[in-house]
Amino acid sequence: MTVDIRARAAGFVRATASDFHGRRVILVDAQGEDLAGALSPSDGHTIAAGARYALDQRLPLVILLASSGSNLEEGVGALDGWGGAAREITRCSGIVPTIVIVSGPTVSGPALMLGLADVVIMVEGAYAFVSGPAMVEQFTGVPIDTDELGGASVHGRTSGVASMVAADMAEAEAMAREVLGFLPDHTDDPAPTLVCDDPVDRLTPEAYEVLPESANGSYDSRDILTSIVDDGFLLELHEDWAANLVTCFATIGGQSIGIVANQPQTIAGTLNITASRKGARFVALCDAFNVPLLTLVDTSGFYPGKDLEWRGMIRYGAQMAFAYARATVPRVNVTTRKSYGGAYIVMDSKRMGNDMAFAWPSAEIAVMGAKGAVEILHRRNTPEERVELEASYEERLLNPYIAAERGTIDAVIEPEQTRVRVHAAFSMLAGKRERLPRRRHDNSPL
Image (cartoon, rainbow, N blue to C red; front, side, top):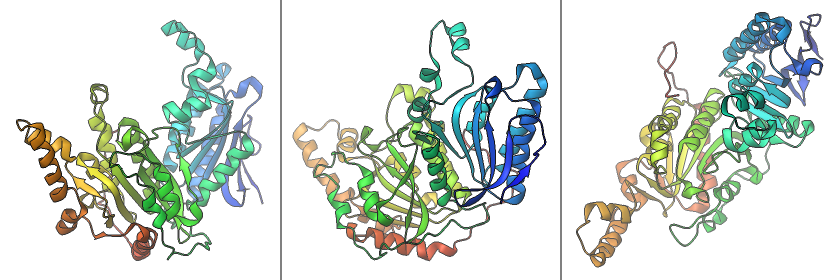
């Protein structure tokens, strides 16, 4: 049954409480045709009303969006309408899931709506930007078309605005349905549990076979993840943006989980600005909606570079640490190969507050690799002496047992036991409840 909201209001935007592919949601259809979907004051009020109902009724908010911005003929009233809509959508943040599907042009104020959503799905052919090609050319003298400036592929690969890119509207709605399948209606509900026939005691010897013989060899971390999760199914967000970090939803034993994993096949799995932003945002999403977190670690550290440091690597790297440190959902960490330095800390280490930390026997947990350490500590030694010192360093320190002795690794496990042990850990943590100190809000390093 569909319930209309502001059904007789002027404008083209329509808001309803509807069945969206089997899920009860507040659906806001803001896809305009006349005047390229320019928003009138009434349209802004209808979007705001839909968001307000979503918050009041504790239902997910789904917005279908195609708008050229505020209606120029309506003057400041149209801006006020959009401002009210932005405020109400912001109030939904962290309380009910917000998904925006972009089906056409999304320009100026409405484009900022994408930055307020939890998940953005763009249809190929759609585009979004705050300032259009004409304004860009006027200010910079560089001609550019809409697709190059803000097309779906640009936002999927370069800006990170689009969480997913769909071929058409039908695929976009199917993607939204899949995302909602891993999320509860609101923050006070547990994450969904799905029916699953994949045995939780299934061994995963193929997980270890993914690792190359060379310690510096690359591989696709998704091959390990698909061996661990139910039926090998991963729903990845931001697949093409910051590809050195994988963020996805999956289930283990039917329980919805979020996964953050380093990706060694892209810049050796090191963390940079985009990966830190991507990881922090996903951790915050999972924590807001009670989705347990699995972190798979294989990284040699932060990617070095003058450009990254000048652009704020310190601040963005801190976002990952901040997101994990304040997360209260069950958190399990598995180190498969390398975990060095600052990246070891921010990838949900024990001192960042993870609940269970496992490591494979192949794990190397240290400040840095043997070669780098020897070059710093023994820079005056001969090359032959350095080779011997590197071998000694590897034998003494590059293993998970030192960390296990200190209690920062709970258990060193065989790779084939990974699925079994991770499921057991999440089952044990199912009743975890953690209270945060009362305060107006935190001050994250944006």
